[in-house]
Structure formats: structure tokens, C-alpha cells
Length: 228
Image 1: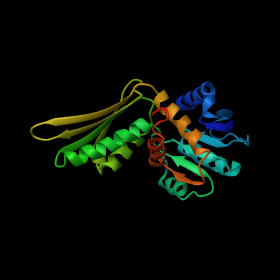
Image 2: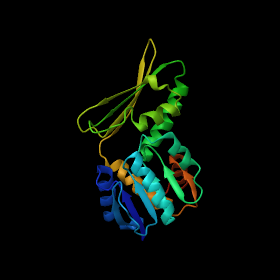
Image 3: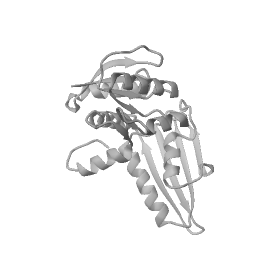
Image 4: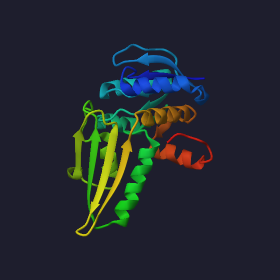
């Protein structure tokens, strides 16, 4: 079994990831330590999984390098300097995505196609998240906007109740309107995907990986039953 340190273990995602790893031994992972920002952890591990804060993500990255372990970072709103640092990593397998759901990644690919097909239409992206979310617009909204070359001025947001995450692209002309929507109804969508990615990442050579790399692997292994 490959050992995983969960960084930000007290958060909602951290708790969900720990639960999913424990209930799915067939994936080949087990939790070796639960870590919070500032903890001194030197427990042996094969992968460090981080959903915490900007400071916590940096700590997780440094810890993974010290342990020579793989590192999966799903924390959003990271400093640009740190993003560049991750992209240049070549000593450990490092995966970063502001949204680790394969379903959301494929949604982004659909938005690219729609933007091309409806060229000339006015476009606007709206996102809705729970009231506890600190960054706005969300990291996912920014990534989707970037994918379709939509200015951030065309991205709106709202924080409502316990909404897990909703993203809506509206394409408008003077004659019609098209709306494409992705709505996450359960946080396990992201947690389960993160666990599957971590199980894949521990077997990859050193380097920087994104959702595009994982999606390519899934499409090549399409006969396998893998959670989106």
C-alpha cells in the first residue's frame, strides 16, 4: 500500500479524502498522517495531498520534496510565484489543479467547443459557491474563463448557503440564448477524483502534471471503471 499524508486534514475536503481512502483499499492508498498548517510532520509517505491554504500548500510541497514523495495540490488562490515554482518541478511527481474533478475538466472542454461553435455570441460566466468560500471568483471559474479566453470582467459570482459549486456559461445573441451548466451536488465528486489522481500520481516519473495529463491517461484507459 502507498502511504498518503493529508494536508489540511481538518477541512471538509481533507476529511472526505481520508474517508474515501479508508473505504477504498483497492486503490492502493492508506493514510499515514493527518496534517495541519504549521505541523512538524516527518512520517514516511509516498504522496502528500493538499487542500488547505496558500501557506499550507507551500508547506505540503516542501514536505513532499523532503520525503521524496509525490505531491497533489488542489488548493486555490495560490501566489503566482508559487505557481511558477510548481511548473518548474522536476525532482518529484507534482500535480496541481484548482479543480481536481475530471467531470469539471471535461466541462471546460465542452465550453471551448461551444465558444467556437457560437462565435460572435456574447459570453458570460457565473459561479455559485457556499458562503464559507474565501476566494472570488473561484479558482475553477478563473480556469474556465482562461480556457475560453473570457476576460475576468465577464465572470460574476455569488455565495449562497452550502452550495458545493455551480458554474454556468451563457451565450447570448439578439435572437437566442444558450446556457451550459455544471452543478456539483456532492463534495465527494472532488474528493474521490483527488484520491484517484493521487493513486495514479505515485506511479508517475518526476515532473509537473495537470488535469490534461490525467484526462489523457483516463481516455487511453477508457475500458476501466474510473470515477469522474
